[in-house]
Amino acid sequence: MQFCDECGSMMHTEEDTWVCRSCENEEQRDSQAETAMAIQDGQQDEGAPDVADATQDAAETMAVPCPAEDCNSDQASSEMLPKPGGSYEVRLFTCVECGHKWRES
Ligand SMILES: [Zn+2]
Ligand SMILES: [Zn+2]
Image 1 (cartoon, helix red, strand yellow):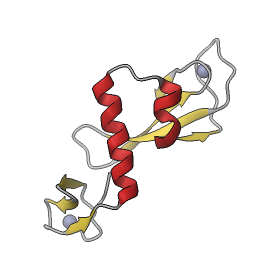
Image 2 (spheres, helix red, strand yellow):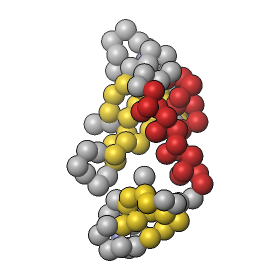
Image 3 (cartoon, helix red, strand yellow):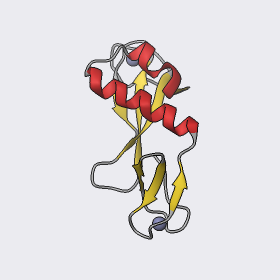
């Protein structure tokens, strides 16, 4: 996910560039972002990814208590997701022990 340096709008990918549809600013996609996007696309295609393996590279692990009642884990991997219809993102947590998923409130 990339935001426009000029106007702050969410940018869209076209070929190997990020394109802002608000002010027509363009930026080259860096290889790191591209790798993360490829991993996210792969997860969506598989439908039911192996949580531990699929999130290993794309997500970071944070010290966050799991909200599941029968789980005492305080470690969860987190990743940023686009908010439907919005121009910003929401953090998605995945418990490393029970795989419970929840969104940052
Ligand atoms: Zn812009
Ligand atoms: Zn848990």
